[in-house]
Length: 235
Image 1 (cartoon, one colour):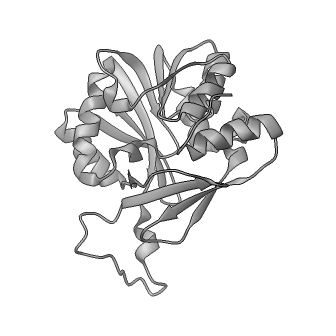
Image 2 (image 1 turned 180 degrees about the horizontal axis):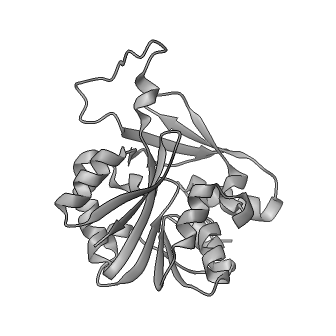
């Protein structure tokens, strides 16, 4: 097994593969309470996936890119359906595991991926959050556009988290001094493995639609439930 440091997701995936014992990845934030990612969520079968993810995967065509693929459970389903799938992730442990499952996986940052073209790009489980902030969303979409073939489509989901700032009487306590209420900083920990702090974006559909339009892309909401939506973005 490859030794990985500062890679809680990768360590967790490799550990679960070895022990099959469920555990939690702790997600720490500077502005809200700690959250958890149950490790078994990263190993879901197609039947266990939410309707949003099932719908997204049903849209697959041509050459596919799975961004931030994690343990590769989306890609495994797509590959079993006969699709050509390229997985990328910055986690060394995740990439090691995906390769062991027969997936075509590379350890590379999305923004370092150049001169490649895909028909379908997936950024599920709020993968569009890689933009880091609303201010960087247009740049992120511009880069993704450069990776799409003519007629290609990007599928991404996110959440409008305004509700986190609302009181029971409907009053809002959003900090107006911040650029956008969906800009977050997180740090992940699995047992004794702690990763670096990183910026992450939760974007509402209206802002996603506007950013896409400015980059010459068209965004359409194709699923919406409980402030969580799936968008289809095309060139």
